Image 1: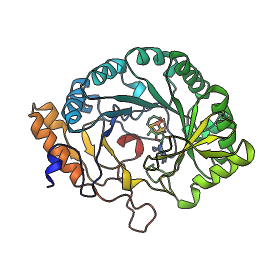
Image 2: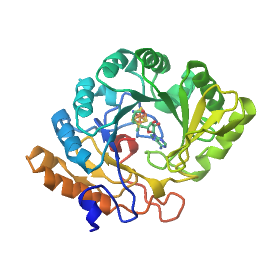
Image 3: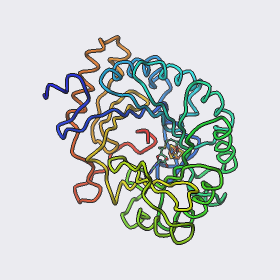
Image 4: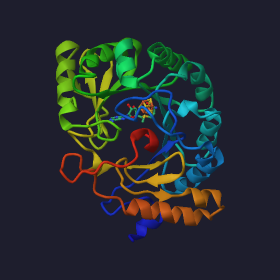
Length: 333
Ligand code: SAM
Ligand code: SF4
C-alpha cells in the first residue's frame, strides 16, 4: 500500500476521501417508488449503531482526513434525539461541516433543535408541489408537512436550505419549473438529481430526465443560466446561476455525467457497514469492532483498506453494471 495511505483515505486512483455519509436509520415514513419497495422489513433497533458508536467512528476517521459529514437514512428525523448525535459529531476535532438530508415530514418541529445543536446545512427532498403527484411518488400523504418543514428550516436560520428533486421522465419532468420557481421565491437552492438504478423499481435509462433537458426547460421557461462563480467542476453538482441574479440551481447528473473520477465519499450504513461507493457490491462490517471495544488503529486500518480497494467507478452506462442488493433507503442516500 502507498505510504500516504497510512495517514489519509486515498485509493489506488489517487482520490482522497474527506466526505462521510452516515445513515442513522433504515426506517422511513415515506415509501418513494424510486428508493424502496412498498413492503419492507426494517432492521431491529438493536442492530443500529448507537450514537456513541457512531461518534467513536467519527473520532477514528477524523484524523484520517474526514472533515465533512452528512446524516441521512432512511429518514434521519425518525431517529430519536438526533440533535444529541449532531452535538456529539460537531464536537469531534477536525469536523468542519455537518449536514442532513431529510424528507422534511418531521422537520417543522425539529428544525430549531437541530440548528441549536450545531447543524447548519440541510437538504430537503421534494419532487413535486402537487399533492396527488406527491402521493403517487411517495405512496403517502404529507406535502404540506414538507413545505412547513422547509419554511421552518429557513426561519431557524439554516443556510443553505437545499431542495433535492429526483428527475424522472414522465413522472417529475413537469415539476421542474414549478419547483424551480418555488425555490427562487423562498430563497432555496434547487438541486435536480438524475434518477439512478438504486431503488426497488425497474430502472431504465430512458426514464432518466437528463441534466441537459432540465437546463433547457429552465432557460426556456424561467431565465437564462450561467455556470456559478464558485462552480467546482470536480464537485458532484453542476452549479448554475440565473442571469437575473435571483437564485441558483444545481444538477447532480450521476447518469449523464458521472463524477466517479473525483469522488471523495465513503458511507456508513445504519447497522455499521462501511461502503466505499453508493453502488459498491461489498461492504465491511465495522459493528463488531465498534461494539467490541477494538483499538482505534484496528478500525482505522479496515477503513483505509476499504478505501484503498475502491473501484474506478459505477458502470451505470455499460452492460457491466450490477445493481447493489441493498436499495437506497438501506444504504443511505
Ligand atoms: N429520507 C431522506 C430523504 O428522502 O431526503 C434521506 C434519505 S434519501 C435515500 C436521500 C436522497 O436520495 C433523497 O434526496 C432521494 O430523493 C434520493 N434518492 C433515492 N432514490 C434515488 C434514486 N433512485 N435516484 C436518485 N436519487 C434517489
Ligand atoms: Fe424515504 Fe428518503 Fe427513500 Fe423517500 S427517498 S423512501 S423519503 S429514504
